[in-house]
Image 1: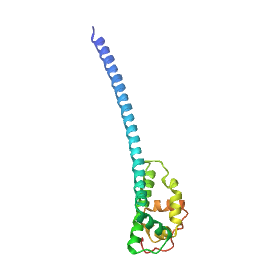
Image 2 (image 1 turned 180 degrees about the horizontal axis):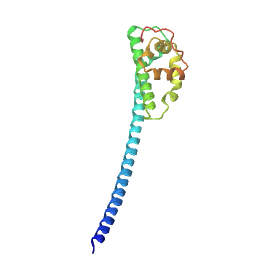
Image 3 (image 1 turned 90 degrees about the vertical axis):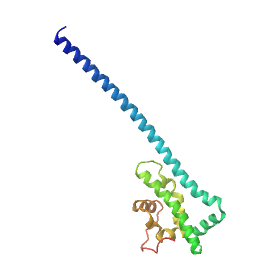
Image 4 (image 1 turned 90 degrees about the horizontal axis):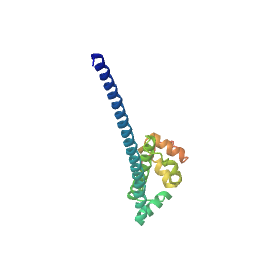
Length: 170
């Protein structure tokens, strides 16, 4: 066997090694892509679960405690309340709207595609159209949220932005 023959065999073995290496890399990339896709599905499922749990916890506050349900109803109706009850009503509304805002921003980031505000349009509209809800929003609660979220809520619920700065939330 000549030196040229050995060189040709070496090139053949080297070429075969490159092809095998590329095939292995392609296999690894495919496996990695599958794992990333699976992780993304798990993350999205976790986001849906967390989203649902935040609203479930809020509704549980209303359902499980008659006094809290009465407080919420009175607050929405705009009834006269003690300063403590105004703070409690404000806190209940903030819990609800914080959950809405969190879901809104998760959607904006592409974490999930639920259309949370559109799904919740009826709830938002009823709350912000109620005497107590609109007063809560106008008194400055809207200032507790990001401008993007406020614009989305106000356009969805057809709420007029306040023309004055308000006195701060309830």
